[in-house]
Length: 204
Image (cartoon, rainbow, N blue to C red; front, side, top):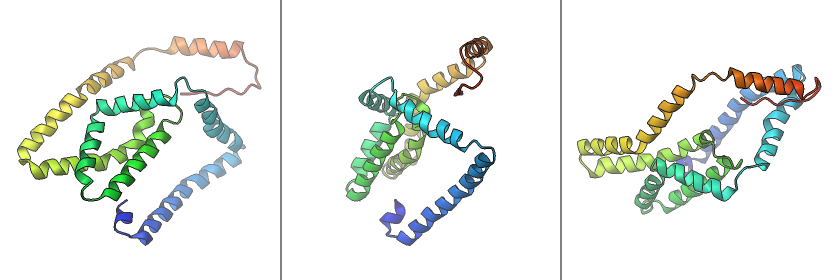
């Protein structure tokens, strides 16, 4: 975004090429490994085809998932942060604000394409929220006394994220639950209801 804003197109192209080279450095050895082990088609099947089929069999509609993601964003006050940052920055650069909104909307749609309400699907959106949060923080420190700004930010963080911290604590405690009986039941079910040559997809 900064390269486009400064019209540094050659530098932007260099970044894109470097990214592609770095991607291929990881991808090519991986593909060679799968080819050597005669499992490339199986990898494509389990990584792509099953996920495409999985997304086609969604338990809820796209509208419900969009409402869910808005609710999640509200829980972390992200909708308010984006709105305030957009209103403040719109005077300086309308084009940048519009590009940011389109990019954010596009990435949100990609992250919920499976139509499943899993929080870890939204991790990819974190880099897109950073500019909005940065603009709001910068504005706060410019307009208000430094110490008062820190107090406001600390109060905001505690009130916004306290319920999430409680939730994380309960999830950590649940990790110690013994699931071996459930796993044994599942293993027996597979053993009794499948043949040696059946394809079985194991998740998690």
